[in-house]
Amino acid sequence: MDDILKECYKYYVDLREEMDRWLKQSMTLDPPGPNGGGEDEANYALAWFPHYLVTGDKTVLKHFHDLKSALAGWIERECLHGYEPEAEAHHGTEPFLLFLPRYIDLVPDDQEARSMLTDAAEHIGNWVAEIPPWYDYHRDNFFGYYIGSRTVHNDADAAYELAEHFRFIHIAIAAYRITGEERYLDWSLRYGRKRAERLIAAESPMPLLWDLDGNGVGEAEVEEKKLHKIAAHSTHHLSSDPLAGIENLLASGAIYALGDLYHLSEDTIFRDAAKRIVEPLVESVLDPYHDPAAAAISYYRRTFEDTTFDQPLRAQLAAGMPPSPEHLALIFPQEVRRREHGVGRRADMAYWGEWSDDGSVQPIQEPSTAAMTLAYQLSGNPEFAMRAFRSASRRLKIARRVLRGGREHADMGGAVCSVAAGHGRNWGHGAVTSCYGTLLLGTREVQSAVVPMLEVQTDAGERCLPHNLLSLTRPPMEGYGDVVFYNGGDSTLSFSWRATVQPDSDSDWHDLQIESGKLERVSLSGT
Image 1 (tube, rainbow, N blue to C red):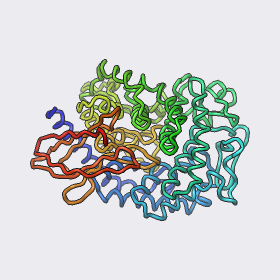
Image 2: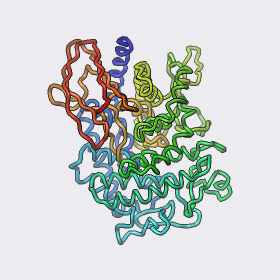
Image 3: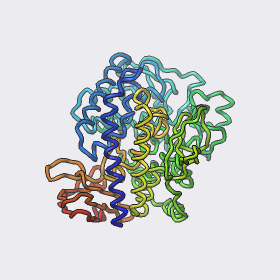
């Protein structure tokens, strides 16, 4: 094990250093895009949230502050009462998802950021008298897809609910987290239960969208009624894809909203709905591009403490993990279009392959870093963690060398941010974000914040991993979890650590000293 941990430490350091280089490169080369800080621009920075938790680098916070200020300027110029006057549930929500609530968690005293989030959230439940109502309390659904702070369209061709409407639950729960106002929680639980009921009742394959009477709408009806514009079917899916409806839900973070609602209410309806999302993903978890699938399964088993799928997952691992490419190649086909069924894909996405010196490239077989992370959580074999760090560091290095940063359009499939944190259909899961914080600190999404299970404090009192320390975390499942600490430096390391298994609980700090080249495994059972 020592040799594998030594190699794992090497690739972790490589990844950490690549993230530092990308931060400096991006701050120099990535100015505000065409939207002047608005739309999804700040979401290009998602990979630096776990990087900050790992390193404690205050440069990250400076960059985040600049992104927040640019977003605030866009809201001031372009929005009415804090939200776009004309918008739809997909793009209208993007400025208030992912980056902004995560930033507020790191800088809770930033009143400007808090006001930006709450000014948008106030419209969700019709709580601002001068703004047209968005939500129909009689039927417990939104009036349609096109909803803005000045105009709400409920024409027949837009009077549907989509996976994108889960995004309002994320915003409302984040507003509840930072304000404590019960109206946000009450509305989230009310609407969330209705959506959960529909997910549980839906026939397979999962519908692409729902009408306002709660009936699922599949591909045939989308074609018949020409609903492609709102269903994103022609852009992001291929015909007859059995995972298209699940893909929509992953792309709007539905499972993470359901997990939050479950912990806030302990209502098992949210667990049952989440299970409907992950169950069809298990058999393809080793697909090289199924980052959001593997991440969702990992989140599901940990958040809902359900190991139902562990046996089929372990069976896939026992059959053998596809090998790593000896020489990695980044590929962009000339024609921009969807080519394969499944999740984690997008028309303009980057492809990866194995390069040969004759100029030929073979399609990559190695699973995603999210799958490698899940494999480590299931097995405790550090080889999977090593492979995840190696893949992430290599991919980021290649991307940083040849691609633009992606700040102008964070959802795009061909930028550095697309490699690090996934494109717009991945809900923030890319080569870096799927393993970096998750393996080192046990991070997960909780109420739109990136929350670590493991905290480490240096001798100097800094909350970060000391430079020469590797930590590999396995959250407790069925009574057992652990952290493996490895000292990759040349001298003895002293530090303190604590593990908070449940986000709302507290735990004691423990002092630890590890000699150079040695490891220490600590159990999290009973934590």
